[in-house]
Image 1 (cartoon, rainbow, N blue to C red):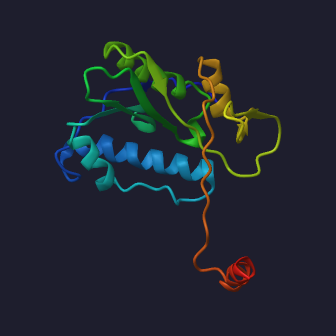
Image 2 (image 1 turned 180 degrees about the vertical axis):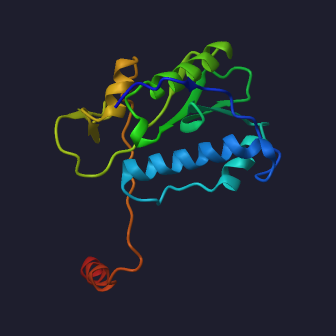
Length: 196
């Protein structure tokens, strides 16, 4: 991989609708996030629809939502979505950083993190918080949660990036899924055994 040479990270305007001309960057950011999440998890069960996210961006009464889109030349390659409470005493910026897999590790993450850090500082916030997603069964060294439950793959590029930028692992959350098209008999047998 080579370094992104013509990288720009402009703010994403809040579109009036998904069909408005100013919606292009918003739609690109949602799609990048969906592609990155699917790549990191191996499924599309966490996919968000643009209309679902648009409502949160348009209604800023409780949570101030913003974002920036990373472009390498004319090509959208990453996005950062940011949220902070609208309360005057808030101290926390939550952010979601998503980079297309083919553009990871070439400076896009740095540029997007820089934008999130700028927004946090300009807003007088003291803490930034984010999350990472990982496929189950990742091998190698693990970073244990300070809560005593769960771990993340320590060599994962997202984990390495965040640790290098001063983040600490706070907790691990697990997501489970069941294929509803699968044969229901094994589950029915387990249920019968459990209540017997």
